Image 1 (cartoon, rainbow, N blue to C red):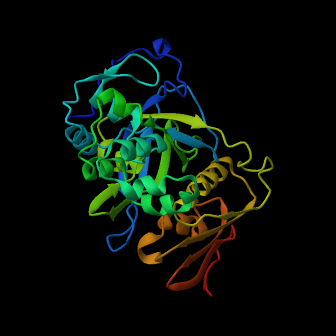
Image 2: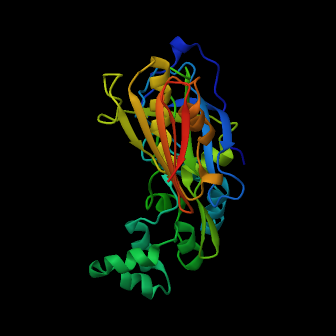
Image 3: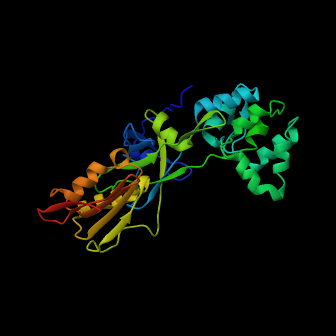
Length: 333
């Protein structure tokens, strides 16, 4: 099965107006691992082509990314339901579609909903624990029980429960977009947006679990459209006066908006000083954009006046600065 979707070549003027309900189909340009091979994290740098989208964003804003679900998980759910995937089912909006398409694009298929859990408890030949935990006064116990559990676990563990395809999707919620802070400036990278994302993977109940959107971007988005739409951050922008000093604290992927801030200030020739505090587990393998920031903090070619302070769990504070003169310094505290 493939997720590829044909997109007809259409003049920009004839394109429909892009909205949250009709997001722009961006194209993946770069999918690169930032973290080192010895890191416990898979941190990725993504670059998307926005040519022709006719929209905009400011540094500090986010973009909503509209993922599709894991096709392998979709197929397993279809098999467990005893379905073919070709059955017609309702969508929350629009015309009915096949079960496979609905599970791939329309519905959230990982987190069990209260309606789904109640249906399992009512229809299962034996689910006393779940029935007990669904009592109103057992909310905290239920949350503990559900940690690491997904829809597929309940379907597999309770084979006596049977749902028609339409009944099953009626127990699910809509697949929601994920918001990512932009890690680039349109003034520095015209018609592009950059993201920094930790790819979520973990094991629970003997299964490998994957984050919906992070795995979509990392594993399946190189050759398919990546639907995106901007989301404005009303109170998270650079000061209007370019001479105003700023202090930025961005551990891990939280550094994304500050990379965009520095790009914006450098292109604008802003004279305000910039302090960036960055933290991660290990500087040697988890220092996201470390080369860029170090050059900006110590190199004369970077016009942004940056003081960079880093901290890892195994090392002390490190500080590098570019004071706009030929002299540089590197301090360890």
